Each structure stands twice: as structure tokens, then as C-alpha cells.
Length: 190
Image (cartoon, rainbow, N blue to C red):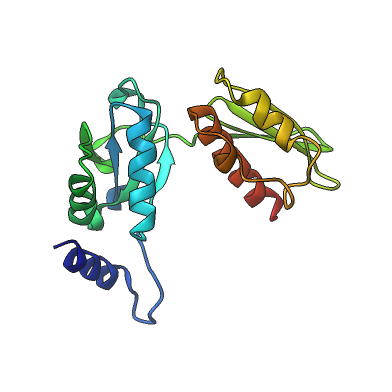
């Protein structure tokens, strides 16, 4: 069943010239609301491995639960998303089309340019680099026990030579730091 759904999804997102063509308007997107952050992290991995165009966002206030992350996905993939999550034993609290919400999901990223330094915050974790050489000068935030270890391993290294925070940490803070690190690499084009 999942294989058939993947084929249908791939067919639907192909444009006439063979390139992927996804409608990114609110009416073409939906969000998955989960009870716990760990469920979002697990679902994200499953859906990305399946090749789906998803993003982690903050849920609009009117649908927030205890979890401050949601998954935005293309509505044309809703059957495939549901099947993947069902096969993994994951059940979102809600699956909502964004057009039904008054507010759209918010970015989890906050980017600050301090002249010679650039800082990215994802959820509660921050990472800052010197713009002249992309050297990591600070890692802060969170309250997880691995934050000092993560900071020790990253500070002083350049973005291209630094280890991936997600490979070093196993907590929510490590996950959030990985998101900030990835966004910082996008911002710096590293």
C-alpha cells in the first residue's frame, strides 16, 4: 500500500518538464499536531526518509498542545503521511489543512545579525559564528545536561569542520541545536 501511495505522490508532484513542482500556498499545505516533541522528531525522520517535502514549524497558537513543534506537509501526500505514521505506530493528535486556520505556523528560527557575528536560535538553543571565517564562537540555551558538552565540541571550530550536533547529543537540546546549526549553514552557504 505504501509503495502505491509513494508512486501516486511522485506522479502528482512532477511538472511537465519532469521537475518536482509543489504548491507551497497555505491551501496546499497541512500540519500534523503531536502530543510530545519526541513524536515530532520520530515522524520527521520517517517522513524525510520517504522523500516528503516537510518542515518543522511552531504550531499556530489556537492548536498548540504541550508540544511546541508541528510538521508542515503537502496535503496531496496526506494518505501517504498517514500510512507511514500508522505503520510506525505514531498517531498525531490532529491533522489540519492550513487554510482552515487563521494563523499559519511560525518559523522555529530567529536569526540575528550582530555585524561581525551571526546568531541563529532554533527553539531554545542558539549558535553564533564569526562572519569573517564562520568560526563558532558561542553555543547556549536549553537546560539539557549535554549542552556544555555540545558547546565544548563545537566552539572554536568552523562550520565546515564542526561535528554535527545531532550526532553528538541525544536530547531535545541537541535536536534543536542541530536545527539551528543547519539553518546557520544555509545562511552562511557552507
